[in-house]
Length: 125
Image: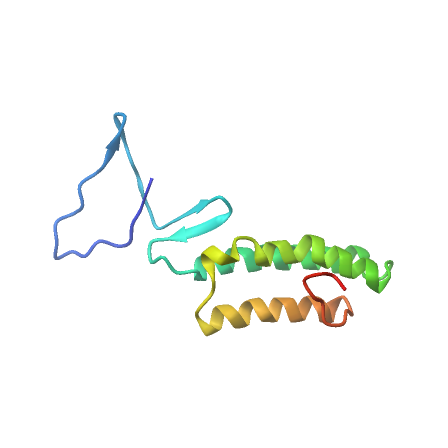
């Protein structure tokens, strides 16, 4: 599998690569070890994927448990189910664009607000 972008029409098409008599297909993004790698080597595609998953888990917690559990139990659910999606391999995809940083911060803020939590630290205190 080769991660590649669009090919300009002014140059010759790239040659196909083969590995053990199999032609490697070209893709624009690929998920490897939970991190989405894109042809531009940016983190926006990955941040979109993890924010979608975090929103899904956060809405599940809100619908199923927010009316029945205490604040400390909701905080533990948030820290164990939502935060790992937002922080997994962050050293690799470290967001540097302002829109990506704001998207992640908004999800964290929304989770605390919807679950009626005070500021949630990474240590869970």
